[in-house]
Length: 264
Length: 265
Image (cartoon, rainbow over all chains, first blue to last red; front, side, top):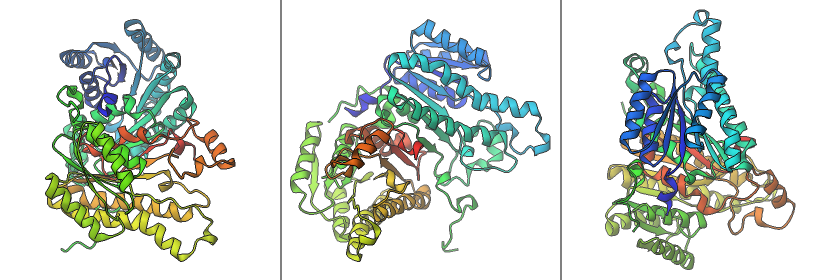
């Protein structure tokens, strides 16, 4: 029965950036499918809120304050997971920064801002994969889910670190996928379109009115996709980018908001 | 029908209870998997053939759906005939009371060097792999739009995205469907009708050149990341994701079920 293959009963999932936004939505959705959660981020208050939500769904939640841009923190996060649960079945590399830098001109971006962004958005995903793969190899199975962005596939005006780091995440996904294909570790990538998390971003993206489907993404939209990629139902999907953007990357003249040949 | 009442809260978006699904090309192995999958998720099922002469294979699909605890209606038709497609869409609404999901499993593989492909082969390959899909989307799209939308999943394969020698015409037809899906996704995005492509990797199915004895099959297997062919039933998860409200913010996308092959080529 196909729906049984979407269940996450007994699995343990680490979710970086688990204190808010997409990360929290995935944590709660995973818990509602039977998984225990390790939520990691820098902000303890937010992690505590996620923990309460996961526990309300009847699952365990370990919170680990972590700076994912530092490999020592990441190694400690995975060690804490193994100590608590003895396993890690799913690694969700969701933490990311830099949307607030959209629109900064090239001369306004310092070396530190560039490097910090690359560390958090890209290096973190490498560090996390490196830390969990030995455990997944030992278990003979595993799922790595990287979160990129539509900006990993398209350019943006005054958009450097974010587009570069997210584009690199796609390549990290492909290389991990090919390397561990025969070890039953699947690595896939969620490519979200526009998911504004505050009023400023909502304004920057004009309320999402140019998105083909007619609305921006809600964090909850990503939950079922993450469940699918974490579950046995996706065991033959590997190295794949799944674009969840209301049709944005399907192309063409859509950002103009009008179609050719429509009666005026 | 499957017991959907005991579904975990996190999987409610994957339920198709109360919806009606039509599978075109239900005599093919992947069409059969689609039918059983959607039936297990609670949909009412109409099985329609790609071509006439498929009675026995369709009956087998109907049996598989019944084994999954559901009933199905069977319609023998030719997907290359517009009137047949229109009649099948009408029958879904009249006999099953709805039409919320359409799965296109229309496929006629064709392998030959370009210089050995004559005009009659061109017409046949394009009719069976592209024109049938085009007409089905017109006829079913009209009905689905009038009824408030739904979800369409086109089952193709990785040749929609990559070239293969001695398969130029087949690749062209598959690639045409890929971009048709993108454009229609945009055209229908604000009318609540989503359309996506599921791309199979090299599949274990009758007639596949990968199964013929010889160098091609042997080398291909070594080249595949999983070192084996895709079994038709392994598309079930991706199919249900794309056909159900679980993917309500996904349209115009292609999801490859290929073990990672597209990462390599």
